[in-house]
Image (cartoon, rainbow, N blue to C red; front, side, top):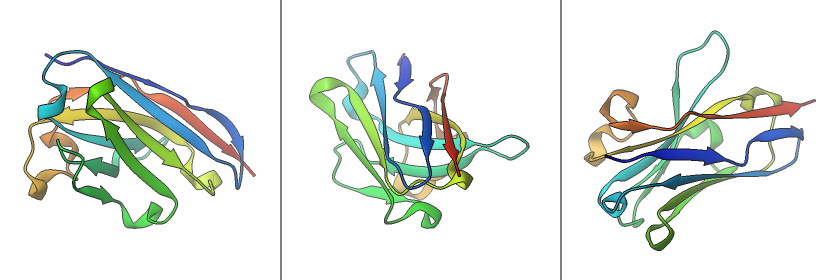
Length: 125
């Protein structure tokens, strides 16, 4: 069992930056791939970024490539999402997720086993 708690969301002006953190409980954190997803009002949950269990491979959605970076620290049971050059269209609830996933499914939300409660990111124009 893994429990995930996101933090770092908030209100930021367009062009600004935020760093989201996700703290995980449980000794098996380092065995899970970790992902970030987001959901805007009236839209489906969409993939943002993911990182393999070792941190050796990262995956980023084309829509945020070059702006967002995912990283993890297994010693701290944490995963991070650095978001730069934010735009109003990045406004959404951002969720952290964990799962024992092969790379082929790492972009699919239904492949993940555990989810955090989400943190709101609002980007004003």
